[in-house]
Length: 259
Image 1: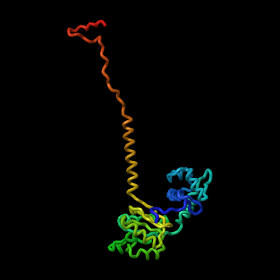
Image 2: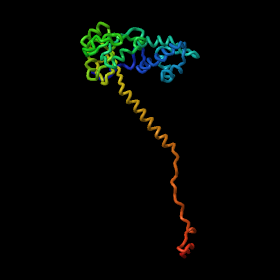
Image 3: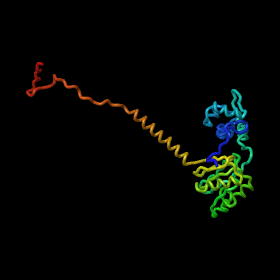
Image 4: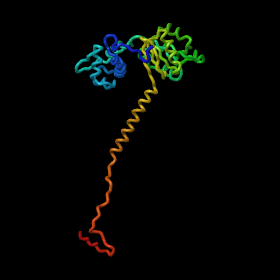
């Protein structure tokens, strides 16, 4: 059993590197925003800035798709949306099950972006008998006893785990045994899966901890900058004694004794 993400070859079909595949959703999000504003074409520099990558990397990524743009014009936005959607498999409908309908699971069920991006929530599943039949986002929650049947009946290959950490591995095992080959894991634990199953982990606490690290570093840099900006005042040293100003007991300058 492998732990965490399953090891896969460095490239997928058509020779597209995994790193490029991971950036395609970023490009698609930026392109979709342009499309919604009826922008017909976009330069590599503009699209790269919107996606948060450099333009040279973007052009290299698009070369794997067979898109090179037109000099002086840029890339056709609608065509790229279609091309990337097709490459990501978003031109078909993907049924998804969400297991664990607590606060997070219910929030995911209510997320309106699934349908517009090629995903359909086929079922909501929870182990609490009191949840059975309760509608969430217009879908009746079903008990985990029915998990295998739900997956088979709906042809589900993608599962979302939003259970507590202690239940996640057992749920994962059942999903895989029922035919699910891709899992999005929100539970704060690392899942073990067999070869051929992809797991993507979303850990909100880890993301917050990373942000805390950057905030601490920024605070340290700001403090150092403030210290460096403070003017340095040299220490005041007493003036050297001048024998000519010294007075004797009766007010006279003491005589200089011969050597």
